[in-house]
Length: 375
Image (cartoon, rainbow, N blue to C red; front, side):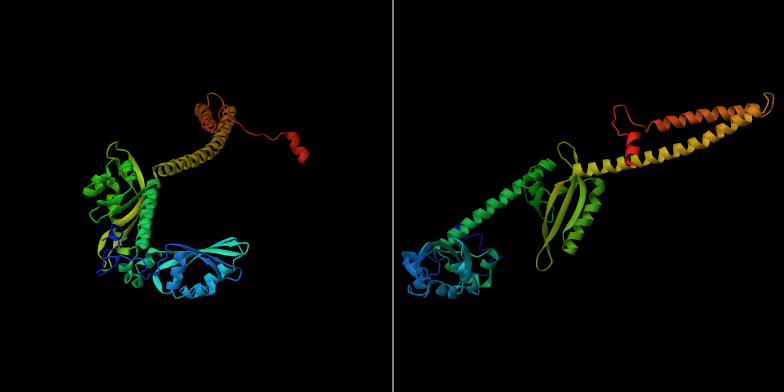
């Protein structure tokens, strides 16, 4: 068995028995084309073929004397208009990918380059996308893959693996796949940075997960996880975890989705962690600052109102005190009212002064002359 296809022959991808890959002998009939080119005249007829393309063209039931674009349109499965558009394109370079009617397990890439007296066309076979490759029509042809198809599958697998590794490495958060016992099947390196526990430990010990979650958030998180399994929809939660080495508390924004089998059995979870500690703390500071500012505005307004009332009390006490003699019974009481009202007014003024501008603070004043000029 070729190792390039070993992972493809899993029950979930190709149910049932899959035969060994056949070894193709030179000259054996096959629709796979490693690559070939043909030179066309202005009318779309071939002037010159290379050997590999000519052999493939005749093997597909065409003749070298046929009109090239018309014959190629007949080979396209349900998309002959793509070939017509490619042939009529006025650009110097044009490209299209079409599926072949007689070969559902691969497609044909067509590259056309215009030259002064015609065009040069290059054809090569390519595999379809993965969802097409594992379709029922393709399953019958897996055992007949040529060496070229195996190479393309292998190349595609390597490219996908490298691309996935790059995305996981550059992701700003933790991308993970978690089992039902809360061990991590897979996760990128940010998991260790955020928790202080190496990834191999996470793969063996599921209890570590609940040890790091903040005690106040455990029950909330359990409810969220149960909800993800019941609704089969992504669930977003924010909770706190504690770094195992430093004890640092981090706020985690998590999106989690349960993975279920066709019969509804819970298989695990897939999700993403994003560290939102800075944003959360900034929001809390902003909220506290806004409350302090609101309180300051209220205090300033109350101080002004209170000052106005004290000014009235002070004025009345001073007026009444001037109308009575020192030996009058009310004289001493009115004196105390006047004195206390004055002291209280001074205290209110000190509170008001706290809201005044600080030394060195810049401001803008409108010059009186500008008022007259504007009017």
